[in-house]
Length: 249
Image 1 (cartoon, rainbow, N blue to C red):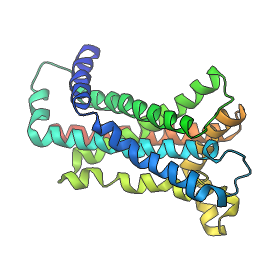
Image 2 (image 1 turned 90 degrees about the vertical axis):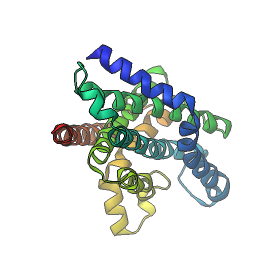
Image 3 (image 1 turned 90 degrees about the horizontal axis):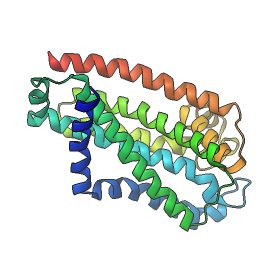
Image 4 (image 1 turned 120 degrees about the vertical axis):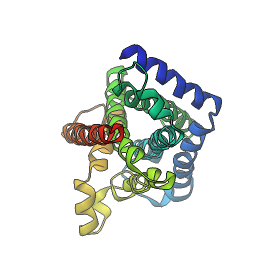
């Protein structure tokens, strides 16, 4: 399966590299949001930190990933409608390698987008006191988050009837950070909004990454974040595999 997955991964990555505007397009919206909040709203937002871009960056990274995984649905839906999927499954390859190629492509392409966003943040003044282990831990959480959303993206990619339907799932995911601790502390929110913000997954994931990059500590948020990521990934994986089997007939 490894060799089959590698060949299919290479095909998808070559398509992306032929038109790198995909990565650029995915990064543009989060970068514009970061510029807007830091240079327009930043002076009016009290987060208890001296450097607002340090506070903001984790949430922006999650927005970038949520935007990027929609292209997984787009590519998978395109393979099905073009007949490529039907052709692949008639070949002497392990059928699951078709899905894993899309999953790994999402990991690689979103990692590139995250690097682009972090480079822009550095130009805007982002600084981190994290050591290599803390950076790796933050990268691990981002990787798990990407996997969780990618398997979620696989489901509409397999089941949608239209291209719009395949990618529409990503819109609420992109805006979920707005109702979390990504932009402002949850303590500043009205009670009902705060209650939702504090129990939804983005807040714990953002807090965990922020603690690792800015404070060099690992609080209880990291365990909640890991539980959310792994839980979503397992559930969506099982649903996606079931949808894939139905697609195969």
